[in-house]
Structure formats: structure tokens, C-alpha cells
Amino acid sequence: MEFDYGTGEATKDSIHNFNNDDDESATARQQIPSQQYIPRIFLFDHGPIEATGLAFNSLARGAVVMSTLFLGPALLKLAEAAAKSNCNEESEEYDDCIDGGGRIYGMRPTSLLTNIGVFSGLLSGICTPLFGSLVDHTPHRKAIGQGSAILLSIVKGVEILVNQSTWFMVSVLQVVNFVVWNAYLCATYAYTAELSTVPNKQTHYNTRFQTLYYISLLAFLILVMVISTVLGTGDIGTARISQTVAFLVCNTVFGVSWKWLFRPRPALREVPPGSTLLKSGFQKLSFTFSYIWSNDNWYVVRYFLLAVMLSESATAALSTISTTYMTHVLEMDANEIGKVFMACFVAGIPGAKLGGIVGVALNPLRSALLCLVVFIVNTTLAAITLTGPDSKNVMYFFSAIWGVCLSWLHPTHASLYCTIIPRGQESTLMGIYIFSGSVLAWLPPLLFSFLNEIGASMSIGLASLNLFFAGGFILLLMIGNYDEAIAVSQNGSMAWTSIDNGYATPDGERKPALT
Image (cartoon, rainbow, N blue to C red; front, side, top):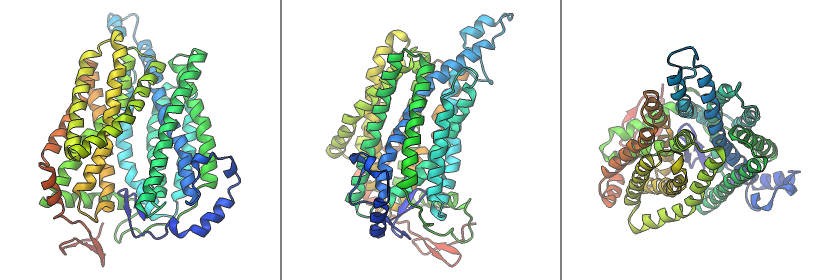
């Protein structure tokens, strides 16, 4: 099975698959000098060595994600201090400047994290199709994964130096970190897609990876909180501890896995005729979206993808916006924010189970609609109730509900999508689904920053997430009856084959070459 990261899609016409590498895998496993030191939970007796590499990498993935969350409160505090130092003591507006938090680099310090989210989302949306093309059309997949892993480790090492004079540089590095992170995911997802062509085996691999990733998140969270509590560090000290732990974990895990547990892979396909390496990923996305948008039989998929663009952009921005809210409005420190995220992660366990139960009892469409209603109600109540430090303890309750919803919505969306797309087109359309979930990730942070910059209450900024949840809800409603939607979607078919220097659509219409 091949993974096209021009669109993030897995296809069946792989040039070279790990399943054809049994002898090579056995030899490679015997040549891993460090395998005896790798815990049993990361090993797969009858799988390719890349499965062990991906499992081991789950530790570093958790460290990278959690260390970023711990860095947020420190950056906000440092930016606020820098902004207030810019207030002119001799000015008549000095008191207003101090009370308002001041400005730094033309922005309110409380807009820092969401502005990072805006630039990260925009640059990642632009770069990810390019990363996909490099993974898909060149033999440099391992180099991309290895290079991005090295860069992530370097970024974590530099972030240890966060202080009053380096906070802006570290903030810029957060954008770099996010873009490099997407390059890393492109490479690792491509390896993941080739582990097996047997659905049950692929599910087994993915389940193990997700379990290890979840364990890594919680272990990292607990370790940093314990160390910071024992040492009595503040937000900045806690951020340094988190980056130090992440740096050590990334260097160890990435160093071992990318040296011994991943093999180079050939290019999976040639660049389409008339296209280039730089353009092929964007052109494939454009072609697929155009086809969906221009065919009436695809209205179900069209409404669903629009709903995903809105609702999942809000879920992606929730951690950034809530961190800003907890730091500024609730005046919570890094340890308290860590406990909030722990409540969110722990609540996600029953949330995933609840989503499965509701999806079976009702159907995936109604389950997604119900989940979005809970999201809207919980976010609205949080914006109304969480008005200051006195209400910080209530934040754990709202965080738990968000955790339930996050673990409920994402798998429900995936299940719904798989049931409403035409049979046999799952692999082709999966990349569009992945892209849709991230293409507007910059928009909710941008709206929050805009509201913050014009002086609106942060409660309004938090509640602004409901615009995206409500938009997703309305678009899902437009799908109509679930059973009828399935029947309508099966009348659509999107398969095209190369003909000479152009393409043929399912109805035989010839399209020009990608240029």
C-alpha cells in the first residue's frame, strides 16, 4: 500500500512494500545492536523493523507535544513583562498602559500564543503538500524523517534557554517547530501506511502506536509536574524543565530509531506528466476538491468536509486559546495548567468509548451532531462561568468535558466519512479528509487575536470557538437523513487514470495534463 502525501492518501499500487521485505526485515532486525535494550512493548516479532521504530518514536512524539504546552504559560508571562517595560513612566497614559498589559512588537502580549497558531497554521497548510510530494516522488523519505527529527531535537535544546531576552526568538521557533513537525509526520505516516496491507494488522499497529503515544503524554506530564513541584519552580522554570526532558527524550529516541529502525525507501511514483515536484501535491488537491465541488452527487461529502474544516479547526485551537485564557483570566500557573490538561486526557478515555456507544445506538451523523451540541454548551458555560481566579477550580470540570468531546468527535468524524464516501475510493479520499481537518487551523486563533486586539473580553474570545462548532453543526444538518446520504454517495465515483498527457474522469471526459 502506497501513501501519497501530495494529498495524504494511501493507495494500493505500491512500488515497494514492507510485506515483500520479510527476509530483509529479519536480517535487519538481527543487525540492530541496540534492540536488546529496547523494552518489549516496542517490539513486533513478526513485523518490519519500521514498526518498532514507529512505536519507539511515540515516546518522542508525546514529549514534543507536551513540552510545547508547558512552554505556553512561560512565553505569555515573559511577553507581558516585556510589554509592560515598554510603558513610558513619564507618560500620562502610563497607568492605562500597565493596566492594559502594554504592547510588544505591535501586539498585546495575550495575543502571542494565538498569533503563533495563526502563522503555524498558514505555513503548515502551504508546506505540507510540498512535504508530501517529496515523500511520494523522491527516495528521500528517510532523510526527511531523520532531518526533521534532528531539527525538532535542536529546537527543544534551544528552547531550554527561554528567558526574558530570548522569549521572542523562542516564540518564532514555535512556528518553525510546528512546520518541521508536519514534515516529520509526513515521513512517519508514509512508513506507517506500508506496514501491512491486511486491515486487522494495520489496525493492530495503529492501536499500539496510539496507546504508546497516550502513555507518553501522561508520563511526560506527570514527570515534569513532579520535578517542578519538588524544585519549586515557577512558569519559566517549569518550561525549562519540560524542554530539557523533551530534548533528552528526543535525542535518545530519534537517535536510536532513525539510525537503526528505519530503512530508506524508493520513490513511490513518478511526478505526473506536465507537473513538477513543487506543484504536484497542490495540483492533486485542487483536482480532487474541484471534482467534489462540481458534482451534485457529491453534496454529502462536500457538506461533510466543510463541517470538518470548521469544527476541527476549533478543536485544534482549543489548547492554545484555553492556555491563554487560563494564564490571563484565571491566573493559573504552569503546574495548574498541566493538571487541567491531565483532566482532559484522562476524560478522553471514557470519551472514546462513549462516542462508540452513541454512534452505534444512533448513527455516526447524529453522534457527531450531539457531540458538537455538547461542545457548544460546554464552551458557552465555560465563557460565562470562568470569570476570574476564584473560579479556576471549575476549569477542571470544563476541561474534562472537552476531553470527552475531543475523544468522541475525531473518531466519529472518521467513521462517518468512511461510510458516506463511495466504496473503493477510501484511499483516494482520505488525504482530502486529513487536509480538510487542518486547512483552517489558523482561523480560530486569528479571530481570537482580533477580538483581543480590539479590547473585547477574553470570555468573548473563548466563546468565539462556538462559531466554528455551530458552523460544523449546521453543515452536518444539511447532509440530511443518514441512510439517504449513504445511498446518494454510492452513486458518485471518483477514479481517474492517466491517458497520454492528460487524465480521464469516471465518465470518460478527458482532462488536460496537470500544468
